[in-house]
Length: 423
Image 1 (cartoon, rainbow, N blue to C red):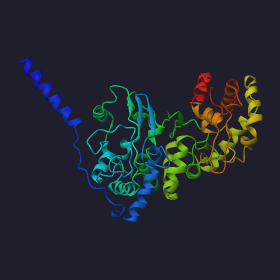
Image 2 (image 1 turned 90 degrees about the horizontal axis):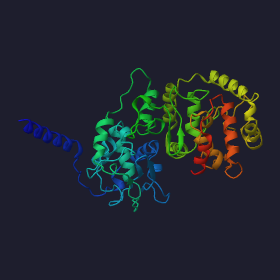
Image 3 (image 1 turned 90 degrees about the vertical axis):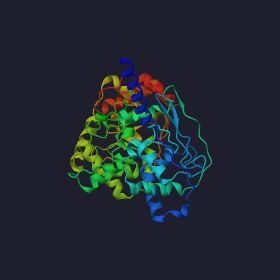
């Protein structure tokens, strides 16, 4: 009797697992012509693709837009983005809109295989039918590019796609965006963009051992692609919380006088992804994130910033004299500010997110390798000091700047410097 019961339970478990794992293929279609979509729909899709920054993740060669091949190192191996141009064999040219929507919302490819969550369907599932339709029109009206990227290089058993079905069972809810009736239209628009196509938490939230965002640490900040994405909630370490106007300026132009410039992955978001977005959408994002960060008004924030800079410019600890001398000789000509007259074009390092962040990687990478166009603010560049400063110089400078910002010292700076030189 017991044997029969166990056999029955095993059969039931196998059937349930099959139902969770198996997804049917969706039939191929003839590649739709660009003329089959309206120009208004394509134009709208272009803006939406920018808000999702699709091109940056799916373009490894500028001459082959949307053809994939971008590498994504993970703790489980390296993933490569796929070709999403409308090429019929190597891209998604024979995908119907139904197949496209399923991939965006459920993380299931046209052939029924499960997609890895490096493709943020966990966020795209919140996007409306109308917006997904416009995005499909835009992608399918692009140039079909013949390009096959490298195969994923994942360790066993993570290379078994069927295991992604189990991952979804644990970490994917598939809910659509729900407006908050207690908030205004701009806040809800900003939340929709940030939580949907913008997938902002994907970079700004810590992840667990399975690579899923930790639900109760959303927007707490995280290291992604060897850059630190700062916290975007009240856990942030910024001396001056983000105000609506500073957020708007940062997302529109690439820099803020109280927080510094957009570098690393964020530079691509600002200077490529958000370029086509209207001011209203940028303002909506600013309204949403100002609320999350608990910002004060601009006048009060300016007073906080000035007071912080005055404090930073006072006498330094004796052990940080060397760092102060390096700053004076190598950095002050471009970074020194009058406390009451801060300028975005002269990033104030005592307020800068690269200095106030809990991880020094952003400061070290920028100091070593500099900033070129179109990173940060347009028209401004900074030389790298990889050969001009020794490891000891970098450590002394980082310790001085950290003390000036009023933050506790970074631990193990020696190792951080060595790691940054390898990036």
